[in-house]
Length: 503
Image (cartoon, rainbow, N blue to C red; front, side):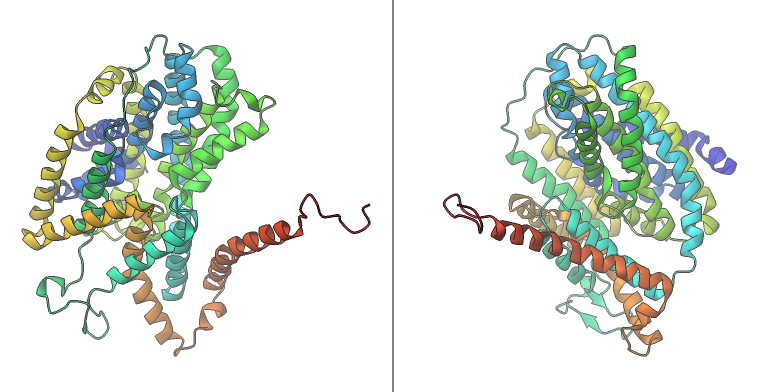
């Protein structure tokens, strides 16, 4: 851990930590683009960097974006990031009351506390999880990959059926190319460019980069109101007293849900806000300027952004779409995330973890002074920003393999991403399923070889058996809830129908 601090304090790593945090805040302020799209666009830039430096910068973009989205949520009632949607309810209400500074101040404090507590827990838990995961074999990884895909599909914002359909497409795309066991070509259509399979970079850049740009251009006609005036930034003692419990509870919720595949910052902020409203003696205050309504979700989304690195670094399982893109960045750098990462690349593991301490301090220091700059950036027309971003995306896609075919893939997946957003499909499950698809197929086939083709062998091993039970619970629980709701609906009688025993 001390060696990790030595890695972070190297001038180059310090610089790129700062760059990542600033870019993250900027992306959080710009509505629609998001950290996954930004990291996907910047993947070619990381080729010339050291692995530690590259991941420190990409991690900074991720957790920096969580706070950046708060600024426009409070000042303009325009969430720059999906995880900041809940902050709009009370944050903008406080701004209308002339307390925009207090809302932004408590959001900065909550983000710092939530992120820092989550980093401390990550430092303690991730090595333990990695040590436990050393006992994982092909059967365990098979069930874990299945569980990750299913959890993402069931928690996705696009609806379960749509998410499962998107995940199925991702699994299908993962089979393109030569079979690892037989070398037979699959779905290549005789094209040499597809013989080695689809590359992750053009898929991510297309779905998250170009697709988001096309979709947001269509939404650019929304009127943007004048930003609220920011006066006193530091919250009062009463604000700190009222929000201290919300910050603590939000941090715990965010850390716990961030570890789960599909949980992430969006679900964490929603859950933290719902808990505070439910336990408040005056729930009617929420939505009308309750300071806890800003503190809880902001603490939760930063804690979740940090804790989602635990399954990525310890198990090699990305918990959300942004982690899937960072997973791809690690593979590009020749580093395979998983249980061996702590022992084989300790400088990367501890360097990335410890860089988050510094990144959170930088966020706290810079969040308020840069407010004016970020609000001015919002006034730049989308018709100017979009072509520049598209050009950077296509140039970046070409420089990966110097391949025109990759540019075609980016355009094709960009159109697909746009159509998915238009029809209510979340591209996240598709990308996660694509990333986990090769792991799932390879582990499943090795497991069946190990069990002589007997699928019940998964139940005979303790870890895979428990994971399989959780997998079944994830599938059966929503079905049971649906059946209970339907039976309750059939049990209700119409107003004109008398029940048995009633006059």
